Image (cartoon, rainbow, N blue to C red; front, side):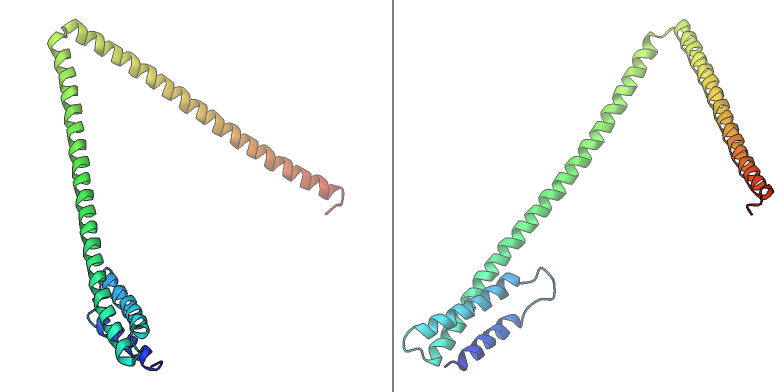
Length: 183
């Protein structure tokens, strides 16, 4: 009997894994259930009755079938949950896109409303005042840009002068060292 138990279990494993798919999601629950059921059934068959090889094989086969059925039910529930989660994720993403679209439409409408409000109450003197203010701000910006560029140019020139000073000092030190016979 001890020699027949591994053979019976191996037979059940091969029998139930013969239809296994090649996809990663496959029937892992069914296969695991069949193997565990065959093992548990073989142990139960060994402990039942007179412990003959027939009882072990019958227990392994029945356990494998029942375990495979339970594992298949597990696989089906898992697939249903994964499909439901994928559907919820898709619906969420669609809702986010719709919300973003609505927010853009609201922003466009608010800009248009503000422009319409200005257009309905603005006079020629308001337009002239706005244009003068724009010209003043643009002139101030141009002056600040020019001042910034000039300060950058001064900084660049200072850095160049410092580099020239450092180079001249290094050459001077070399010359003094030669004069003193250190080289």
